Image 1 (tube, rainbow, N blue to C red):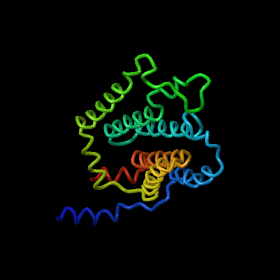
Image 2 (cartoon, rainbow, N blue to C red):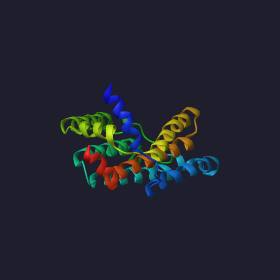
Image 3 (cartoon, rainbow, N blue to C red):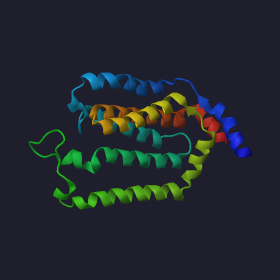
Image 4 (tube, one colour):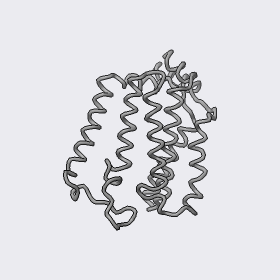
Amino acid sequence: MNNIIEFFKELKSRLDFGFHPITILPLLILLLTLPACLWLPIEYSYENCLIENFQLVVILAAFIICIKAKNDKIFFNTLALVMVILFLREINCGRTVFFHIPGGGYNDFYSWKEIPYGYLAHPIYGAFMALSGLYFIFTKSYKVLWNYFLHAKLSIYNWFFIAIGIVFGLLGEEWGMPMLEEMTETLFYTSLLAIIFLQAFNEKYIEITSKS
């Protein structure tokens, strides 16, 4: 009981309402979401087009930040593996990059069963995720994650943007609005990038978690 009380007492001091420069990126995506849904050609939300390509750039940037983090190197290596998983997910393990149907539409790709040895794609992807999970366990990165959960500063704006991205991304999928889905997915990725950047490079964030 005392631990729970201490957690909530400390939580107030952990809330960071500061607007950091890195937060401009998700804010910009949020502000552009409605105009994009209203006026941007729907083709820009398709595979290998403007929005998804930008998402890949954001994920790649997050990967670079992870491998160059100033602290908790092993934990950030785990996050780097997560970025690889997300990157592969966005390109469907390469299917939507290398196997477009000639003469087909934007979203016309061969299925894995139509591609030589395509049946190996999902097992290999699954094995990579499993090995990443084992790395997380055997390196005891979960201890760092738990320490962050208990003590790390919380960038309120970025976590708020992540919540918006998740909720409206699911709604966009349910409502059959691919532009809304892709824009809010981009909001999620840029907010995640901002949170990772702050914990990896912001001296105040690093100092607080290092003391815990």
